[in-house]
Image (cartoon, rainbow, N blue to C red; front, side, top):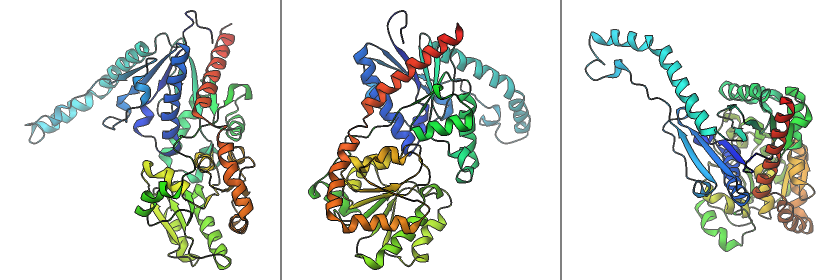
Length: 422
């Protein structure tokens, strides 16, 4: 990308930070910080848009990027509406009905005024930008800037049964915007293939940009994990771990069945620990231990504080991730970086992340999941080899690389936009 003034100016929506969870939250925070550092080194500019009306009142944790010399944060507050029917003295009594009718009559003109005001604010904030990077939450195409959209996965198209309607609608809006975007970023080649197939997007319009891992995920000595593990009633190297929201896609029911098959041949004192907040259709997952006769040996920790996760991962003997579909699979990368042997599903993006630094399993076959777990639990030489291989594999995935590859995708977007204009 060669702007006339040789200054790279990227505008990026951070409104998603007020609502995002799990991988999307980690991706957005980490990318913003890495982009700020990279652009500062290049003499570039990063404008971060916080469109407050999307999620009013939700707090946003400050990021190191906010203090970067390359960064400016623009908060587009929009117009605040007052309601006549909510004025004290009118909320009750005979005037309330009339006030409600006045409020209703003002709905359309107020919406038009609010839209116009927000449009002016957004245009001012993105003036001079070469690229606007849209988010899950907010898709916008400024005049004069190339537009880029990250698609993390295509589960709503491939497996709509795994999603509630609200989530499906959010992804549908992204997919409609994908047709207008100059370029698309996918988290993996598996996701890129799904984007090309399901959205009928030419492959050259999609760049693969892998995610990175936080430096907090590294091998830990038992002394380093003790305080965290004691709070959860665990001991270093004394549990099998799986991590992620409790929902059908994560395949916990088959994992629990696999663990039950494993138990007769192995030490039943090694619990299966599942850490993650409750999603939807959680009841069959919570009932699975009793159904398979391993009640008391499967522990659900619920949502674990972010500060505890590195020690929780690093303290496990084995990390198992038989998810049915992943756009990238960040927990697998974090386990590799922590030097923990990994068993992961042989589907979608996970083989790209795992490489030969772990074992792959057939996620729909509990017997195969159990067999791969048993292999690691009974082969100390293999276990030790994978403990060494994990951090070496993870070293290839850094947020610095993510930022650089993202900027390369921005350059492609600008080139494509210029070519179309010609």
